[in-house]
Image (tube, rainbow, N blue to C red; front, side, top):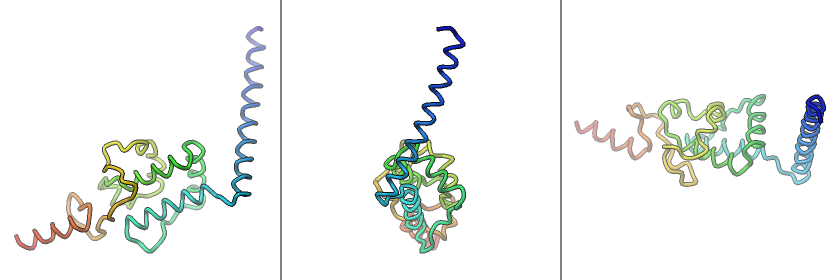
Length: 159
């Protein structure tokens, strides 16, 4: 087989793999529809629930309806349900001061997705997001819990 034949064969193989991948994605989407399961909605609701819990909010997180479902679908395809859900929990355990001030936006989660592959230097993952940080804290560094915030305010009053 000469070099030109190899190139043509490689192109046909790539085209066939792309067609199979597209067909597989369509079949999986149909299967999920038949089973009544929407993994994108489920992942977004897990994020929303964790966000509401973390910030003790009765309001839901405001997703960007054009980009967030598309990004979620891409992440689900790459990572799978379980891994994406685990990374969402790790994300909300990240107590980086800037991230807390920004209130853990979804876009930052997407852009830093690999940071949460393992719990690199973050608060150890316990399976939940823990106690929400106090929303009215002006301390530097920011208090991590209401208890810590109350203790620091008490100390300030006694000085």
